View 1 (cartoon, rainbow, N blue to C red):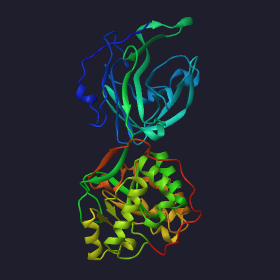
View 2: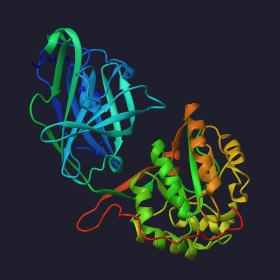
View 3: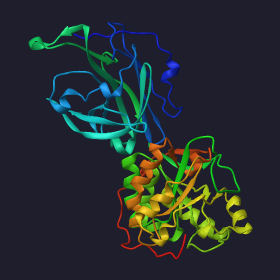
View 4: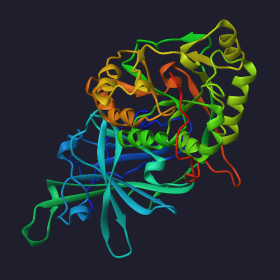
Length: 422
């Protein structure tokens, strides 16, 4: 027997980004409880899926939530799940549980089969909670959801005096669902970033200090180390900016598309790391990045930090802001992972941290990166791309026909091109 209740809820709290375009599913009135569902709404925001679930009573702490009982083969207890159905993933339940850490939480994944529901590991999601609701933000690439139709609903379970007694003298259990039957239909669009606006012009050494935001930047790639760095960023669900050498891009085109699809940014770092490159050099580099990925860089990192007036003017004429830094790890000297960590974590509000993913052996940088991320997040900082740090916005384009947002990694050169300095 299903027990639910409807409380008045401000639909403004369920607002999704304009790109989402999804309907809100409401739950008909029945009996109240701590996880009594009121409404659920799911929509797309760039490369993420955003789900907002509202309940009628004060929401329990996430530490009090459990995974779906099928995940650990337990009897039903207190859980709150997002149910998704798509051709690319079948039917799956996503149930946040446990303590949130730096605004992220583990979400248990259960696969709904014809005869049973079975657990299938967990993924990380960003979480925001209010008194009577929760917002989950999950990367589409992390979910494995491809463009196309998507059905969604929410389900919950809890114990309480108004619930129906369980079997074999078990506790009284309430089960709820929104909508009560079926699922709400929406679509995932094949969007890709094509550029950005609102980042300004001129030269920046540091971003605004109005927020606890920091930008991690990586120069001289792409290289074999770029994929290692991307995996770490994905694991921690954070993003960075990669300033790339134009002549190296064609061999890593598939990886670059993956970088963008996972929410990161690519910037211009000249064609061959020449000091003081001219307009033709910068245009050639931006052209090859755009040809490989569909993204036109709006940020330029001067090789070695050397920025004569002619180069700054050329970058500005091509619609790019010149980005220097205020935290230099000097990781290109391979000083050791502990030294890289010590310097990298010294930034503050608006800091731009310089590291390298190419130009030599970058294993020390890769080794230090997880602790760098943890250091900033433990102090309440958010890691942003350069466009985000500077208050800009990405321009999006829907991909049609046989184009793809990103393709599987192709063969890549074994060794990075050595670079003598930053």
